[in-house]
Length: 255
Length: 256
Image 1: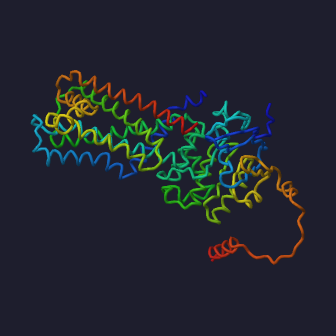
Image 2 (image 1 turned 180 degrees about the vertical axis):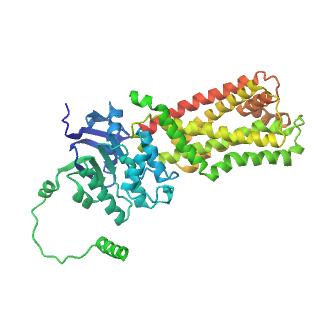
């Protein structure tokens, strides 16, 4: 029996593409309602893990359970309780923002698709752009709509595969805020990213994936203990370019 | 599992509504699948038609079946294009990670192809009526024509599905339609095969388009259809089954 407080349990997961072994025995588990960040460089296998857990890909061996259902034998039950926001914004560019949300609401068989769409448009600040084709949206707006589409029907677990890749700093901050709010409302978040500071800011638990293996897994405090104790040094604090950019842009906006 | 089956038709209608919107919002699609065939028809009737000897006094009547097939063949290249774009963008994966009847992701495109081609065929027939097309066919014959055209559309749509699923680029996804688009020209669609040199004639008389064109032409002119209709049906069904199987194979390979 799976403990009800576990959202995901993975053990001994392996996957190869032709001769290339991408996953070499992955094991971890994620607590319900937490934010779990999977860190790794490009090609480390992050997306492969997400695809297996979201039933898009079958593993070669090992087990994976999502919300109490085995991904290989009960994919339909898994799909009922999850949502995927993939690496590329999965919005229909020819439809408007509103039509995109209504489409997903209908596919989730909600009773009031229009109402569900209106609520999400409002929550994500897209009401004004609701009736424009999404091909006219900025990258940040598209990503917001993309995440909004994943929240239709209030899934218990949401997968965000590199949700901030390709976004400008402002849009990135916005997306991170959304992720935080999601977790605060009780949704379990599985996040992959190559930006270490994102994981540091958000995640309850962080796992580092390297060459097909999880080489570290724990809370930020636990991971920090793996390194030699910090030496105290006095360094003049220089603002990062990102901080400068945000400060200038923020000032302009305030005027 | 039951839930997936129960929602098949509602999921299907969502998919159909989605890609029909794609068509109606794309001027390019409307021009290519409806206006181009009409322009072809006008060109052949009013420019080339006077020089073509078909043995009939009404060239529009002779020409119409071939024009309809060309319209359908150009329509399906957009089916492949739309499917390919879905695969490229994340929307295909989003659908697949949702609790829907998965097969509707493919069937939605095929059904859209059927519906949109029906619309363009009807529009083209209306224009043909305006420029002098006349038919003595009864209800049964018209139904038979509709049936053959629907089968032809389905067969080509599944070929389009193979192309859309396995293409590596946008160009590749729609390029497969060109040879199909060319077939009507080497058939009895525009000129009788009698006028062709023997090698070309042998090809023209034994390729699917000729038998389909002849069957539709006979049905529309109220003549007895003879064995042509069975040859036409056999071609359509044969292509349909083979293309469907290969499309499913390509689909399985993409989603395994």
